[in-house]
Length: 338
Image (cartoon, rainbow, N blue to C red; front, side):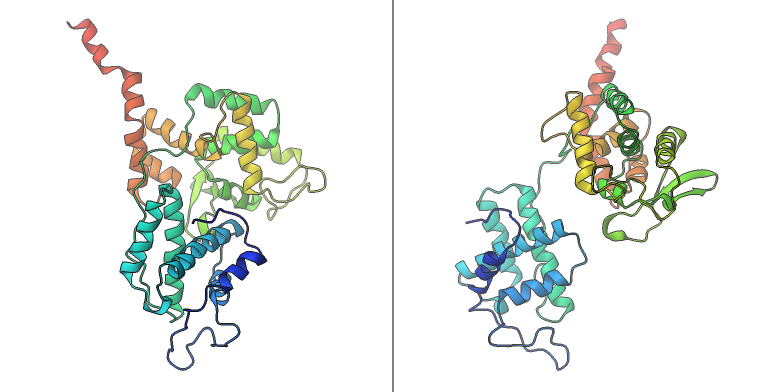
């Protein structure tokens, strides 16, 4: 039975403690043992807590790893396996078990990511070898997980926000024109706006606060709404968040990803675009699609969206092929020929 996603609590941690009878920490060279064996504490809770504490991640990711590992530990117990004798074939069996539960490819991938991260940690800490390194997530259907907007819908969205909120207009306009992720929007500080070779840019702090030299170019159409919004805040400092909350009691704090997602989703809902397929990430998809439909290629998409792998950017090319064909109607060329 697969446990639903809820926030870990004391009862669930007690559940982990109940499945520790087969768990033994291996003996490793002197001085390299991460967790001292203590009869009263050697259990899944200790191992899981140590793993999660070692991860420099957001709480949402921490919860995801937690539940992925709960599924894994429960499966080990129910299948009669023992942690110290697990092999790569056993991890593959766990993957097969998840698939047979008819879970979505996204859910299975999430659980397997937890297991891979866990074993990468156990290898680094010399607890267990990494037996999950070669396990790959199941193949899902390629294409967009979220809908993108066409030119008129994007224009209508901006018009709606321009008359409603300087901040929200600046945020959505920024995402649409640069393809920023919500996490990148909220991590931006005013001081991250700089100039490079005569162009105004925004330094991008992406996944994991990496220090890559990532940036997006702020053309006038992108910058002007931001400038107007900042002017409305009065005197600002470089170390202040680029976008701040405006609610009662929390005014002036850095926005959360949830609040940015809410702004985007509510704005789309206001112009008739609603449902789970429309989200803040839809705006990022829109950036890619409009680049491709207006003369850009997948390499332009890769540069703007800062994809590490070209294959990620190429998905957009394949996905909009049908849309572009319908728009261009190449068969119509023959109407004036035959």
